[in-house]
Length: 337
Image (cartoon, rainbow, N blue to C red; front, side, top):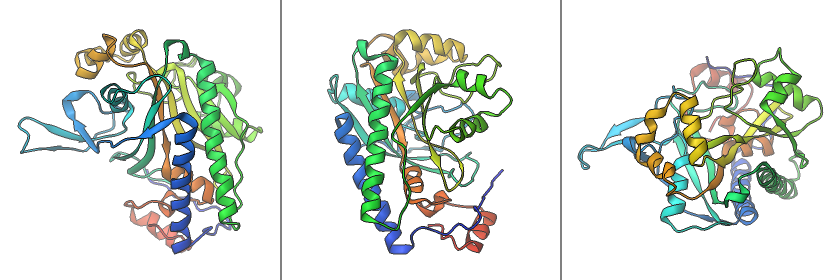
């Protein structure tokens, strides 16, 4: 079901030309900060992959990728990517990256089955990044270090944005609170997963890394779904920041240390996806042919929304919206791009 909520008294922070200038500032500044912080190099990335390659992200396993035939390539069927989680790891091998450095790219996706609301669109734009690590770096300490580095890059960009546009007032918290999905369920057992996130952040934790997403909790439920063939469910998480305009927890990144041979085999069994072992990507990973990596995606429109203080993602990205959303936004003086 589509929903659109306009906070009481909300007014767009910028209009027209100034809004476009600010979006450009955020995107150009943040990618430079991220590149420097994580030692990344920009690469070109695909909009679609071969359906039979096993490279597309299956998300929660129910979302339908946009697919199409390619008459010029006999037998090929293309799928618009849901994310580049697996493609990036293969690219690191093909391009000869080594431990300590990595890649980043613009990822554009179509998620046709997405329900539309203030923060969700059928169009997804994010910085996808992936970095080669050593076996010794496959641990929680290194994951936490990387999360703090990314949060620092986000906050540096936000501070620079306020200097460039003094009328903007959003300030973000640099101090990261780390908590697992099980610890969060133990704190708020009667709330839904989304309600738990906001409740924890309302208790004073304005920037959070929520860890171990994809695992089944004591309640028998999962906090959220994660495909079994990229993140290690013991070494992953979401970066959440408090969104003052919407009064809620706000995910800006999903990331983690990627599966190795052992964790991939285990998670495929747990997810009932053992047949994926026969796909080309999975065969390479299980035989040790791919580098050990960590990586994630950082939402471009999400960051722009957060730093600018916008209440609807359509203020910072071009997409398609239902008539009710268009009418509600127009009535509140909000221009959807």
